[in-house]
Length: 211
Ligand SMILES: CC(C)(COP(=O)(O)OP(=O)(O)OC[C@H]1O[C@@H](n2cnc3c(N)ncnc32)[C@H](O)[C@@H]1OP(=O)(O)O)[C@@H](O)C(=O)NCCC(=O)NCCS
Image (tube, rainbow, N blue to C red):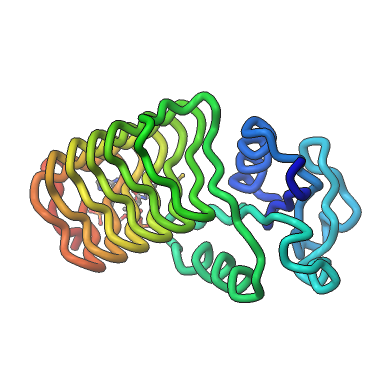
């Protein structure tokens, strides 16, 4: 039996992560959330245990953590939450939903999250604290960098690299062998047919730099 798992953040993403963790076989103890309105509350049948101070007395390893901060468009918040607790020695297991299809050689770094309905084909690598959201399709040999996000229903064709902190928006498509640069944002519904430079924001079909 693994240590109990606590989800940081009881908002929409946190609730999905709690469900993911339970489906993946973890014993979810509850949420941490600083919102005064959630103090002592239950969310989706799980207690809100307190705020970050709750962990002050928890030795690293006595609990596992999951990042419940979604942060679409603001990857720095999700990254900061992960880095703060990881630096204190806390462990974030990779969470992979049993209803995701993952080829046998896919690699999952600590804290990554793969949601229900996602497909990850052979040779895919998922980085630290990266998020592959509901129903995303990640074809062969793609690499998803640390803290990067692939939003619901997005499609990465084979050999695509999504660098650290980049975001591929919902239902966007990136054609084969391209690179989405570090910190870049691909808007929802975009079709990317050229490499996206670091920190760029692109949208449309075909995707162009946003004005
Ligand atoms: C790209 C994005 C970040 C832009 O957000 P924003 O900075 O708030 O931009 P605005 O809504 O002010 O729109 C700015 C302009 O971009 C256009 N635009 C915004 N999103 C667009 C999109 N997905 N495709 C095409 N054009 C888009 C707007 O029409 C607007 O054009 P205008 O200036 O000619 O009127 C956002 O629209 C987006 O697509 N986010 C991804 C959402 C997502 O994947 N969520 C998943 C959560 S799990």
